[in-house]
Image (cartoon, rainbow, N blue to C red; front, side):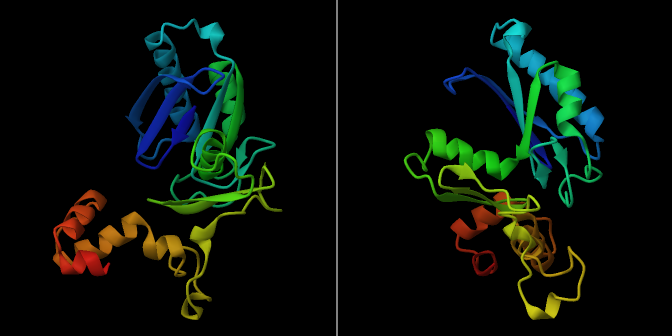
Amino acid sequence: GIGIGPTRTRLGLADLRGELLARRVVSTPRDADPQTLLRTMAHEIGELSREADLARDRLLAVAVGVPGIVDPNSGMLVGLTPNLKGWAEAPVGAILTREIGVAAVVENDVNLAILGEHWKGAARGHDTCVFLTFGTGIGAGIMMNGQLYHGHHFLAGEIGLMCMGPQYVDKDFGSRGCLETLASSRAIAELLSASRRERVSTRRLLELCAAGDDAAQRL
């Protein structure tokens, strides 16, 4: 399993029961094109297999979660990929299959999260449920009657795109007052940085909140 994020990529090797055999977290190369980044991740998967003392031919499949709109039928990113620049229309599934030599499943990262929670986590026993994520991006994965719900254009759950006020309606994405633009961890940290005239990370923001900082708590 590969979870590609804008700053960090998480990799895990598991058996068919979902038991984790090996894992690692690596930095996501900045501004890397899909081919280069996925080739790097294929190498990391090989390293994980060696770490777990597994022959490469034991690897049956790879699943990759990406922070973008995915057509799971083609394994291709479609539409907006605001946190992965230059990845629109990237054939992620085809690239991974070629680089690793096994079947590749590509899906939106939050959609995979709700599948995981339904299988082994907080949503066990609930066939209609939602997973919300708030980080660099904001999104949701939706399961209805035991089935992942994608929507007609694979946009189901993209709550980060919601326009949060009529004053933003004629603006483009990004400046449009989208929920993600206004309330992602990055946006909140940048607002606090501006008010304090120093760079404040998300981690530091939480520390300031815990310490009773008024500005941090208001944000």
